[in-house]
Length: 129
Ligand SMILES: [Zn+2]
Image 1 (cartoon, protein in one colour):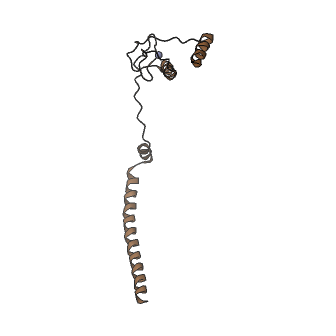
Image 2: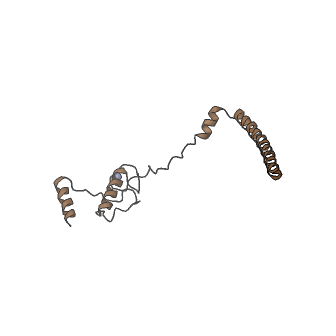
Image 3: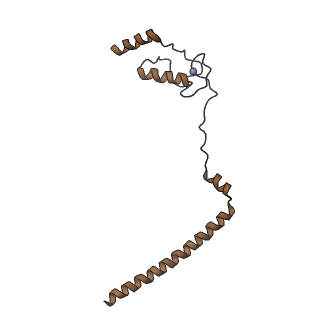
């Protein structure tokens, strides 16, 4: 019985001391925070927290790889339109050998794709085999 009460008394004493030490540390932190609030104004805090994302470098000065195209490069040395064409041609396996990505500007001859009935016939022919 005596050991039990002693244990309880010790636990209470430890609890009181730990709480006192924690309160002391918290008071020091609160004081430091108050000091920092005095240094920075609201605008400075806003500017410091709102980090601007660095803009992605764009090589828009380069010209498209396709002969006669005046649009700036978007990706892989092609402008947006020719990149899309390159992507679709490579996806269907109809990509001409000279259509290599990141080629010199105005170095690749454009491909005229069949439209209308001719294009439809070609697509159906390709689908049959
Ligand atoms: Zn182009």
